[in-house]
Length: 209
Image (tube, rainbow, N blue to C red; front, side, top):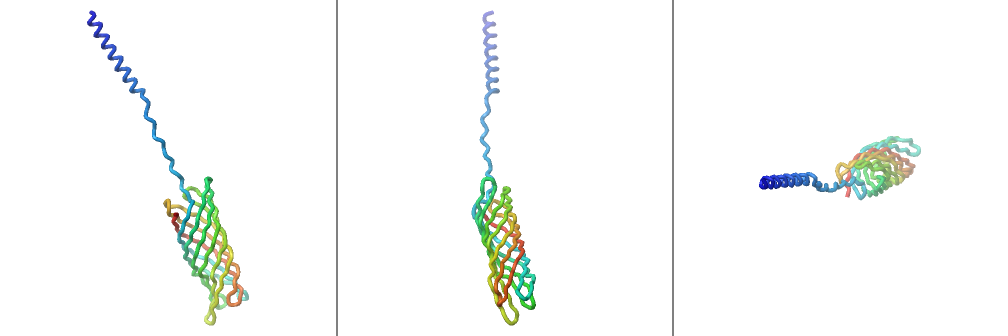
């Protein structure tokens, strides 16, 4: 009888120990998850450079001769630097140098644009990889007039204003679509006052440093 009671007690203790161990395993706390690192957003801050092409729709007014359309393709390059703030606001400085194959004819005189460039202040807002901007500053261009009997040229200095959008295709490469209005003011060519203004559409790409 005593032997039976001892065996029963041992069996009960073994069953209780096993149950407690199973409960302890089940209630064991899970290992903490590793912290998730946040991917930093894209930034437009820093230097950049690129190239663009486009088309210019110009209008030249020559004293005593009237006005003429001076249109044509263009090719150029640009470089600049951006500062970006935590609220997404972006400001920057940019310069560009271009050559315009603009030409027209007024009263038998050929008129052409040529080498031109600008220095501009830019301001805009970044929507992650898209940067919408406006820009304005100083612009200058060569202007030529010639016919079979004479040739002369001058440099006109004025202002430029416009806007566009840059879009980052990768962390370093971006594309650009831009509109500008250039008012180059007046210059003397062959003794006559020449006023030249221009609407320009540019497309291009750039590389961030």
